[in-house]
Length: 282
Image (cartoon, rainbow, N blue to C red; front, side):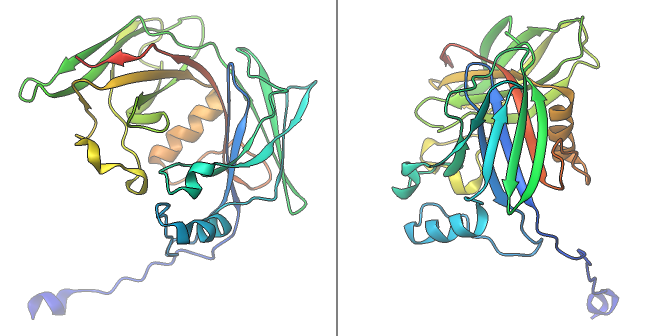
């Protein structure tokens, strides 16, 4: 009775919901651009993300994705209109995300040092952004360290050397061959060189966790760690400051800094990417 009498009902005012497109686009060295466009959702709106249920796939596509936009990438000279693409794996119930995207035709392939513009037209509204591809980071060395108390699992470590001549912004991803369908950013995978400028330092490459609706529970996963015997490719990526500010504020800020104009949410991100050779955890 005392607990009940002291309780206070709290009403949260989330404000008026404003529908805006969410644009997430990437271009990296050696590859064409790709863009995913979704609709933002009201805070308390229910959303069924079960892509293993074939009956929910069409509903998911219609309610979340914008599939009739015009998406153009240019480098100042060449213009490429991206093509809308549906991954056929999603129609077979495979755990694939995103199931649809706008994909570059190959007319523009990302180059280190290149600058790229994005233009998205949705219902006559125009959204634009610019990004660059910095010089990639090549790790000095990688090694796997098993846990002392559980030697069947462990963590990948990397030693990297920062370039003192420029400001650098880093992010890493990892993909377990045969287990992950794409490269997953790990825990604490984003940082700049504010405290490491020009220094050699060690980075712990934690294993990233897939969203619950994409997670395969058959592999006996241990959070943030790899199993002995896992074959892993690590992707080390650099980005420009505007892209870094988006990811930094998305991870821990109430105000996310987008580099898109026109009122859209999201990011247009250029990655200077380096992929390691397959690395066996042993």
